[in-house]
Length: 523
Image (tube, rainbow, N blue to C red; front, side, top):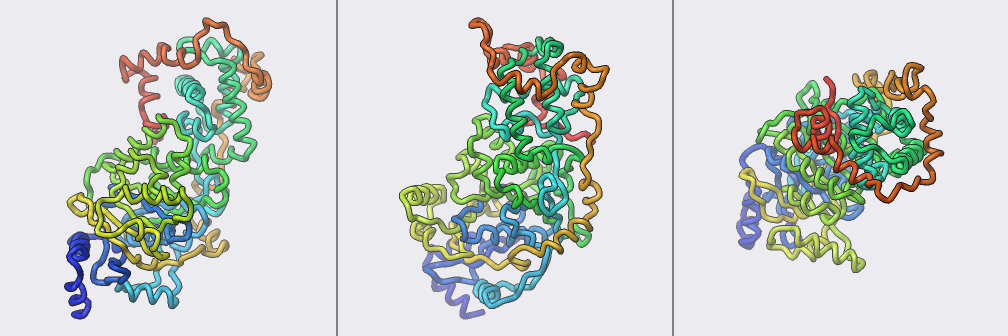
């Protein structure tokens, strides 16, 4: 195309420098064509090197600017290159990635503008549903595996209560009381605060009746909201997310969350559990030719909202370390300020869609977003408010790991269906999955509740049940003034001193095995 090359040669020097920053030689994902002064330059392709997809990223922008289609576009190309992908489907419209797209005038026009050889293509997909609520193979976790830190977040416990919950988990781990579902945890709390059970925790600081009451009431309210279905067995094995199809393409795992989108604390924390579980199980691989998995974390602001400093530190550490295990994480949200600075600093690839500036808060968010980008030849404040749907400002990491120049980009069109597949088709695909028989039917085997309720158990001889205990502790008991607080008990307890001395003890292994206190999977 000599005319296009001549036009490119006539570009101002800044535009030529931007275009040269994306001239990668190795395998890469094609995002679209560069925009300069409002003109689309199809010969100046904007790309992401495939090996850099495990360096994490951010896809941001106001509602309706095309973030979901960007995820679909990137997921398609990853799958085509043999990389498995995980997508959280908040609105229920990502299932179309499994079906060929529909050719229409808009798609043809976009393909022509960016020199895309568009072909309607469906991609291998597996559909999941949290707790089996919705269309998909059920995803469940045991309470033991989920761990006290993540559970404390969904129960909205404070730091003191979270520490006490950690003691309860430790006791259950030591005694072989498996916490499979929520009734198991309630049974253990009730036993430990009974007359016979209190002595069990004397050596690790004890558990106050008032704190136990808060935990029990939180658990009861949690179950009353229909949350019990998400915990239990068979527990989902996150290795399922790493599969490839028979033709070598990466499997696209779509977790439908539309049915539980009114429970943001729960689903956002479950997404974090999936990442934490992957982090535990995967070996170190260093810098590979391509990622083992790219994980898109939609509605990312929900994960960080109301999170404690310890929780945020754990997220930061997980994001920093999971890269070396071959997993790339993309956070999807409206503005970069939704993501804490320490996490944002780990995100080397950025796709920023348009922002609104209708209110003073919008304008403040716009200015903050501009400051997160490298110096640019564009007027980013003006550009970010003028981008159209399917356009974005991009900067990624080059093959050498250096940031590329900021490039305004007209994005390619996805080749799969841009919308949901029919419910009947989706249900048929789910039931045809080899995973359906493995995870569809919930199992309630003997665990902590049954063991503590058996006639041979100390708790069955006069101890109060979980519901009785919850009623009894509605009014917190007053403690003597010289009685140490729960925090002081926890910090001063023998188990924490032992942890500081050695990680070789049983409790040392239990608490330090995971950044989030989650349990290692038993193979």
